[in-house]
Structures are given as C-alpha cells and as structure tokens.
Length: 339
Ligand code: COA
Image (cartoon, rainbow, N blue to C red; front, side, top):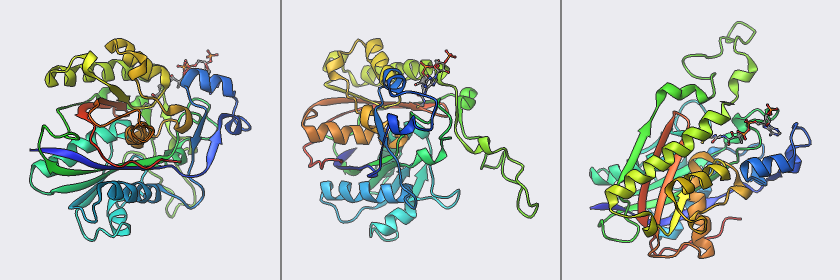
C-alpha cells in the first residue's frame, strides 16, 4: 500500500510585484536582489485576499486534475493563517463543497509540503482516508516588514495542491520513503515573535499595545539559515536516495524548496547533481514556503520538462528549523498552467 498522487493544481494571485516595484520604497536594487537570490518578481495577495482564497483556487485545480468530486480529508500546510484560530482547512473544505470531512492545518513553514505529504500519506496508511486533498498555501508577504530589505524581497504568495489516493508502492505517483527532521535549538533564526502565547498583545482594555510593532513581523538571520538549508537538504536528500536504492544519476529532477537559487544550486553541487536536472522557478514566484514545491512541480510538469516516468527527488527546509525529503516517479496526470 502507498499514497499515490493522482492530481495536481496550483494558483498564484494576479498581483505581480517586480524588484523595481519593491525598490521604490526599499533600500535595495533589482540587481542586488536578482544576483543574491535569483528572484525578479513575485506575486502578492491584494487587499481582501487571504490564504484561504489561494488554497481554494489550488484545491479546485487539483481536484479537477484528479477527476475527483469528493475526498475523505483535507490537509492544509500554511504558516500564514487567516486568523490565529480556527484552522483554515475546514473553511477551505466547505468552500470546495467537500462537506464535513476531517480538515486541519499543519505548520512547518517552508518544509510544510514535505511534512504534509507524509501526514496525508499517513491518513491513508492508517485507514482514516482513501483520498486526501493536500494543499500548501501561503499569503506570507502579509507577515513580512515591507521596509526590511533583508526579508521583503524574498517572499511571495501562492498555493499548490495534490490529491493523494490509496494505491500500490510500484505505481507511478506513489510516495516513497521520507526523511524528516527538526532542530529547535535554532528556532530563533527565522521567527515572528509576537501573536502567540509567549508574547501577545496586552492591549485589551489597557488602551495601548505592549508588543513592539517589529515583533509582529518576520525576523530572519539569512547567513546561518543559508548554510543550514544547504547542509540539511543535501543530507536529507542523500538519506532518502540511500534508503530508496537510487543513485544521484537515477534522479531526473531535483525539486527543491525555492528559498534562494544559490541555495538550490549549492545543494545540487553537494549532491553532485547536474544543473540541467535542477528545477527552478524562484525567479517569478519568490519563496512561497509550503506552496513552493507543488508550484514548482506544477510548472515543470506543465511545460513538459517533467514527464510521466521521470524520477523526482523532493526536498525542503525551513523555519523550526525543519526539513524533509522524499522521492517519487511522476505519474501521467493532467496539469494546468499557472499564470
Ligand atoms: N539590498 C541591498 N543590500 C542588501 C540587501 C538588499 N535587499 N539585503 C542585505 N543587503 C546587504 C547587507 O546589509 C550586507 O551589507 P554589508 O556587507 O555592508 O553589511 C550585504 O548586503 C550582505 O548581506 P548578507 O545578509 O550577508 O547577504 P547574503 O548574501 O547572505 O544574502 C539572503 C542575504 C537573505 C538573500 C541570504 O542570506 C539567504 O537567502 N539566506 C537564506 C534565507 C532563507 O532561506 N530563508 C528562508 C528559509 S526557508
């Protein structure tokens, strides 16, 4: 028994923000951002649009790709919730017309798609569900300080989704072994300090806010994260390749989390993987956290670069710290373009 991908879909909000757009208010340049990150533009939600809306759009497309009208559960990976409570997934299930199925959110930042695949596969393995809609959706730019040149250029909004069904381990689309890990000793390298139980606003009834405004925004230490991202993704990738019995030469596509093109290339170099097998779309989407890997899969499958039968290595790394990798053989499923 295995969880098998039977549909994929993705969606980007229509608002395109170029590096030049950002630099009208940010102390940076298009050249710096593109050279240091590989990003030229990203999408951002407009006023009134939230993670829920992105998730629904990606969900519709994944269900259509799978030819599925119903699922037994909805799992949503996000680190940019619509509200602190409740989870986004139940509302997404409702809006998709999926009724009262089990639905919950999972938070693992940029490795959310890998953690979510493993969790969704687990629902199938445990008999809770035969078919799961799993979505990674993020409106994370709403949590980034637009005046912080260290973080504002990096992130973008978007969503990607897959439908998983119960199937056999030797079928195309079957999820392989997983390598997942975390390092909470480095939790502060990428964090939004306020809004949770540790540091929340005490303003209710007091007429003032005790939390400094910058604590509501993302704080990031770029350099140590860069190094950790390369180390962890390379090690984790090697782990799943070894356990699967694949050599690096067996990998047709490395689909790594799009945090920085230099990170993805450095992981490929560590693995001694040729650049023409490294999938990249960060230039037009930025870092979309849990949506990054499915957006990229959707992109390369739609262009025909990723074809049925290709062997794919997926790997991601993010806040927590957390990371994960898996492998699969790409199935023959319809894929719609993401504009
Ligand atoms: N525009 C212009 N200059 C900038 C800048 C910007 N947007 N951001 C930083 N700089 C400057 C810094 O102030 C610094 O100047 P100094 O040398 O005078 O002090 C210089 O550029 C180098 O800064 P540094 O932070 O060392 O740059 P970097 O090459 O490490 O690139 C990141 C910064 C954030 C792009 C890079 O560290 C990165 O991608 N890290 C990983 C982030 C990540 O993966 N986050 C999500 C985890 S999933």
